[in-house]
Length: 372
Image 1 (cartoon, rainbow, N blue to C red):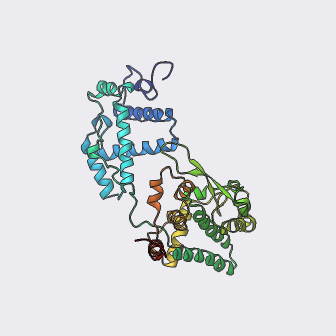
Image 2 (image 1 turned 90 degrees about the vertical axis):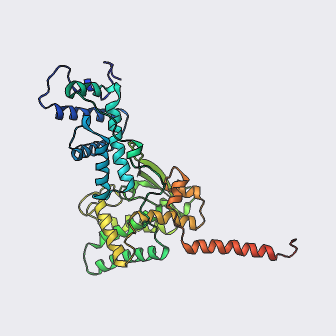
Image 3 (image 1 turned 135 degrees about the vertical axis):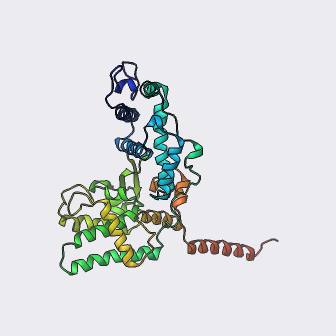
């Protein structure tokens, strides 16, 4: 609360008492948006998060063709149906959109901000809450991802990486400079898998993000990786975590890129681990297009995506017998249940696990001296 006794976002901070409005609808709506924005920033929410919320509310306003003091639950029903049926929004996206409108209505209907009184004075009506439990998407299942999304099998992953390496040799054999970005992309995909990284976590890595692990001296300068742009909680800064190197092939892959190939890139003077041909850092669209091209060239399942590398990392660590808590901490999940969702142990792993149990049972049953 400010020295004038007004809370951030209140109507009296954005509309002057007694001043007639030339375009009341537009001016009050814009004042509401500005007030809501200030209220969210005062809560220390990130500007990017606030911008996303604002875009959603403006989109709903355009679809409803009505101002907030005219909204009804029917507007929400029609908008939600359009998002699902026409635009194909997934469940989590629809829920987030509805949540933004709900939060905006909570703000407008809170007496502390005075927007209800302001609307009554100008329009003879006031905003109400239009998003309720009975007309909004619920979070009914922990695993809301598309069912076809999965991890690579080990043969699929090997084929994918082999093709990436062959592409470097093919382009270099033609004497073209394109082998440099091809090498970068191959090393980038391997690094994303080696540390279980998300797409943006991978592209935002810097040269200085690697360090030693005192308990893993065999990894040299690449024993740990500091992930500084981890997935943020809503409205919070990026979440940091430290990831330990697990596989012995990882340091050689990264060192070869940094020491031998990266210096030939046009933007090698940038601090980014993965510079682009046209800028200091490779873009998201480039990663997606190159990944899809390699996947399709090998004839792999179209459901495999960049995030499948992270799923594969989790799955393969679990299959190799690593402690689930260690895997959870490596990938930065707050809850073990989240890691479990990503774990897609292969059928042959389950078969081997069952075989070990059966063999142990039979061995115990046949052990000499066993009493019945």
